Image (cartoon, rainbow, N blue to C red):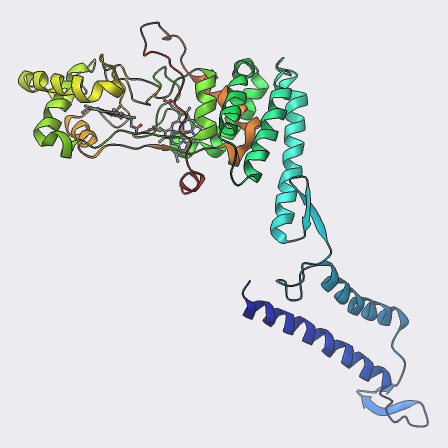
Amino acid sequence: MTFFWSSWITLISFGCWLFILGVLLFVLKYKPDVEEDGTTGHEYDGIREYDKPLPKWWLVIFFGSIVWGVAYWVFFPAMFPKHWEGIATVEVDGETVPWTSKNELFSELESNNKVFTDNFEKSILVKADAAGATATLGTLNELQATMRRSENPPADLQTKIDEKVAELAPYVEKLSENPNALKVGSRLFLQNCSVCHGSNAKGATGYPNLTDNDWLYGGEASNILTTLHNGRIGGMPAWRDQIGEDGVRAASEYVLSLSSNNGSKSNGELDQTLVNQGEAIFKQQCALCHSESGKGMISAGAPNLTDNIWLYGGERETVRNTLRYGRAGVMPQWETKLGNERIMLLAAYIYSLSDKTGKSPEAAPVTAAATQPVATEEATAN
Ligand code: HEC
Ligand code: HEC
């Protein structure tokens, strides 16, 4: 609050308090002239006015509220809040901090969350035979709290956190077979994820389908956990400056030729000369991320270009635009917003939805998923 508003409020509240106290003292002292019959001589429609003292109970309440007004100023940051924090406190993150409406909110969120996590451990983890996760969750929470508090976290702290997250994977697989966990997971999905991935998780242009077996970053429980904890940013560079419009057209034609249905039926016949030129460009520029075969690479988040599944579309002009301008899909991070327990439930839900039939050895090499933490500001802007 600015100095002006805080003084304004201080002045008004203290002014009112003084005024009311003054009026009361004045009324108590004031003795009107009384006539012989004990009335003031005033008469309204046959009702005559006496001068009787105020009722005791009324006075007690009145004085009580004046005293309470002062007590309020002592307890809460009501008078010049910048200089007086009040003596009331709340618990946030295990620390006692002065009361503010914000701190009170945090404190309430924390205790609500405690109810959720206790319940999660007792009635979800235990019933899904995954109680072993509790210890890992405890360590993970501590590491994250250290991360939040330290201004210059030690270099290996994030690595330790990532390791603990990966340790949760087997328990996520167990949860994915537990109907109760899936019910909670699906509700969390509707609240947090369906805006982008659709209520059936089948995605939309630019937002991947989570129910198939085609993964940008890998469909193992550990990959999904990493995706949810840290977020992901797609890194498809723009090519027009580097390979020119002709290069873009050739490479696009080669991409279409890789796809199991030439990208889209409406593309018609492909230009074989362009395809051949494009192949050379592809081997030189694109294989690095999309692999020599074009089947993609989860360590780069680069999609498989040989199937019939498109993130941005397989129409000739759409593919050209992808190459011309690049793409950078943003999956927000959820660690700070949802916490480890809810992320486990969500990962279990996604893992249960995904189609695991096509996990063939032929699929893209499963290397450790790239850890690409998304800056919190960027993520919350979404
Ligand atoms: C603001 C939109 C948005 C929201 C909200 C969102 N996502 Fe995403 N998600 C994306 C985008 C975009 C990608 C693809 C990133 C890329 O292109 O590299 C993605 C990727 C993913 C992936 C990786 C898919 C793959 O093929 O590897 C998973 C898993 C995922 N999201 C799950 C979730 C879950 C669970 C939630 C809810 C907690 C969620 N997302 C909320 C936009 C969103
Ligand atoms: C630095 C790694 C990298 C290089 C090099 C690269 N790509 Fe990509 N490409 C990606 C990533 C990552 C995505 C996914 C972008 C996203 O998720 O937003 C992508 C997406 C695409 C898509 C969109 C696929 C779809 O499903 O809509 C096409 C097409 C594509 N790349 C073609 C190419 C071609 C052709 C080249 C070479 C000229 C190339 N890429 C070079 C990383 C790369």
